[in-house]
Image (cartoon, rainbow, N blue to C red; front, side, top):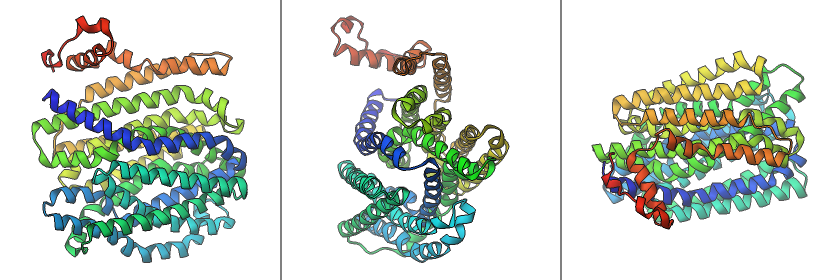
Length: 511
């Protein structure tokens, strides 16, 4: 593999990922600052209700999209005619919105009957109806954002995300703090912001492309995308069905069980930082780019795809480790004591998101060969595994069992996707290095749990120090290739004078 081509690709991925990181970073920073505010104005049982309805809202959005947004990149890069590309984009934007409109109206009408199944009281029926409307708007927004990512409009993407965050937070503070609307205020904010974004993005993109949609594009998009819907839905269920499972499988009075749902959801929001800060910004650029590369094919391309997988997993594992070792002390310093026990589920959830990040790499062969029907069966098997594991573990271990069930199901899912994709389009993924990375991260987390210091701030600092030992540990264990070591020395030698005599060109190293 050409070291120069790999360097160029890594720099491009890193540069664009940092740009796409601005939005999630701003969102999480603001969200972190507002945690004491929300925990003061929203009780754990209401937080649990909001989490359950969020699951229903997310699943509805996945169903309404019909997988068309996910298939846009696959057919866009395969099409060479500029006019047909514009017609494809118009089809993607108008197809889901027009087809799903009657469906969303039916779902809103039936929302009241779903309340008992979701385990929420009849007083939340209007809440659920409004959430379904917000899901339709969110689906249109997500299709528009996918177009911006596919066109590599990074700055426009970040500007839209930043405006979305500012508007959402401003409205949340107004509704929750000033007008004391609780979780209803958060829902109103979501609906208003998503509706405005959906209209603005749809109209703007249609205006730029000024091309009529085409039936033949819609047929191809649906044939490719519909088999992905069960896979995407089951993935979301694997991530978010746990609040419902806790609600129905944990024994206790409804208020205490809903409080445990709220604690699990709070821990999940911390663990998902791995996804928001690493996987999402990385895939915002890399997801369309890897498909563009895969369509070109060639041994050089396949090696680049494999190496990028290793590097991105290394970054996500480092972030997950830092979150896991510091979360217990961090919660004690920052939030109301009612939420302290949420730390128990964070390490398992963070690890699950690291494993889930591999799916975007491993599924390349399945997407390239258009064997998306396999995604349906894989999703169903992994979902069934999670449900069975929850039924067995939840009565005995509570919310920790739910977190472990997610990790188990996601690991099985990613493993099956790897097996199917490799048969369709073999990529030399560095599995041995990934295993070494996982073992080192788990060992350092275990070591951090032996640190006991009465002062919470000192304990936080000590445990964070354990998390920062991942890269030195991997260096000693021989995780890095000789060319990678030489590249590191080259970078350091440019800034540290006494390292000059030790400089070595990566070209001289064994790859």
